Image (cartoon, rainbow, N blue to C red; front, side):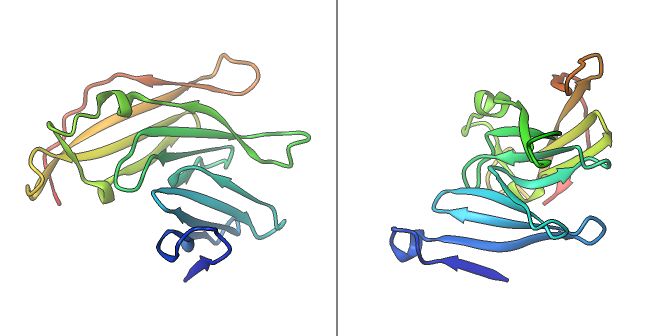
Length: 179
């Protein structure tokens, strides 16, 4: 299912598109991928309440308790940031607010050394305060195997109001993955 926004003041090829990315049957949560020229975002629609929010990231993964969500931010075909949001309480109607944004990927990006396998990225929550983010890279653009780089983000449970995430630098080695 794809929706096209013809109200945008751009040429036809630059108009916004919305497509169904994911539907969570348990929580009645709809995720629409919003593509705008060179950027992408995800619109989260809570079908129970009708509320919606646009997060400037893709491939969103919610924690088991739905209090945090993590996703990739960047231009199409290139990831620059890992973003983590936390559900707000009180007067915010349960909207998510950014609590962490990394730029490690932007600082380490060297097009001459590695080539990201964009479709092979993965996010997995290992607990409510720890998330693994895996990227796969080819050494050469035409390679059929790739190596994995894992970033582990963990929350400091000592913080009173909300959680503060930080990057844990733990080297991991994984056999090559066929891509």
